[in-house]
Length: 486
Image (spheres, rainbow, N blue to C red):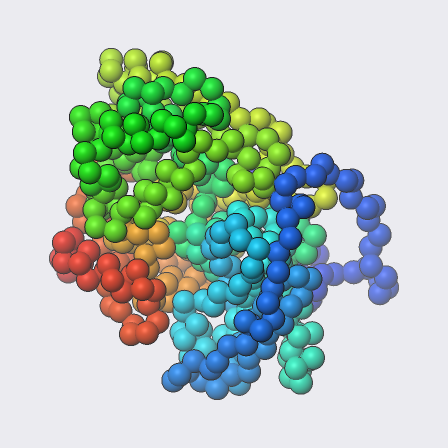
């Protein structure tokens, strides 16, 4: 259910914005120390931020701005504040940065747009790599709270931001959605209430993403004649070539008869019949994302040591071979015979010392959230949007959610124009109460329409600002899947 915010709390928030609200004196409220939690592999890993990599140059053609960088509690940061600052701060949350020891800061792809419109932005490297959403959210919040202090240290006195927004890609989309979710607002050690969010290509189903990976693996092995009999599949490395050979004549573009059925299963696991799925599964450039998904096969469900137990659970998944939700005899047989992975309910339980190790995106939201997702993404699939919408419907918070489907075939394959429009529409909604248009994501017939995704797809490319993937793919995707005006 949506949690109401009391009048006193709202007045406190309006008065103090980022920095909390005390009692009648200046003494902070005393809280008991958190209970110790068990150690996990992630806690013993060491990461390094090379400060020499942090300085960054002015953006050619952008308004004049101050640029600051440094290291805070092990996390690198970059901040840019235009001279004509409008008083609003945008926090940018970057995506998954791998498992290496070196940390890095990523700048927002709409940097030029933000500066041109007077926004300041800030981005953290996070103090840890791996899929550590907890660290990403805490470090992003901590940087937001330090914004005016860092400005003062660099000779510029700034008032606290009048508005604070958060945007992010992929894992950063997960962070952005989690940052405005009430559970995480309450549990975080660095507490911030954002005024709006734009999660893009985000893991909006949190641990449901890992259920998808597990379902894909068990289905692939079942179809190839090497069914999973225990989890994790200890012999995966040995059987992987044979599994792939049984399913593809040319991986990933040409499937065998068994592979045809697997492709249909994956279509339904990733969001159902929709434009661009075929390209995303096996078209030009698809191998990279397929490789990313297949690289998760054979793992133990601890998300590379972010957790201490297996979180993957496929017991609630219904495998389908076609677009008819009714189960055929063949589908019934497949579902009855496939190995079901059962994760531990304790793997991602609430923690006594702060956020869950993988923060939930419950859709317990009370500020505008505008999401973007490409239709061909196989790595963080469109089904993440559907899961999030069901959660919003269940919690009675769908009035705060707008979702947009984009006709891209890769992960986070958005043009700058699409991202800037989503951000501007979110801000206009938050500032003026004008809820923007979005796409229906749950109605199967709507999603399956050949024109689905045309409404908010903008193939205009901004030279020099687009990601290399988008710049390379969008022209050919637009040609292959044209949208007719009107």
